[in-house]
Image (cartoon, rainbow, N blue to C red; front, side, top):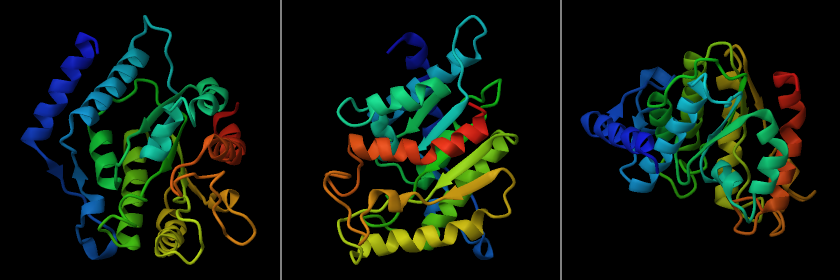
Length: 256
């Protein structure tokens, strides 16, 4: 890590320790809950990765460097895995590098962690054209939030992205299916979470919603090992399915 990234890392840690969380309100009766409250993760790898992303944005803001960022890919490990050489990197290079994308996926993140990260990133001098948001699976399933609370967190992130870049288009994706069978409790939680999103997002200008989850499933709703070996993270084929599914949306938004 270079000295600028180190400085960014230490600065981020200092900010985090001085203000560990920033409250945000959920829409339902103005009640706070964890998914809508910006929260830091006190893990060295997490700060190191955040510092790397700060450095990428600083480079894009430097007129002397040939670096542009026009697409934000925001999420958790599922997005993070586009940087994994074994499953996602080839797909990333094929579909997203030409779109001048930055990978803002962090393994294990919940909605509250994404809110913190967005609050502590430099603002791009030239606003990106679009963002793709996929988040919420870690809030539910093994997490502690209800599907509705997780959905409120997704809405809070979409709102935050629009506050930072008002003219940017935001494509919110439904949480991807998990577990092999349709009747698994985790799958049911995901279906419930996704069911709330169209209503929560419908009045947000420049924000659209798409559920591409069925593209990973067979006609009976079964999630194959070929598509997601661990029943959560897409394989290389799964990443290709994902990229192709949103390609028309991105072409329209980005004009590419």
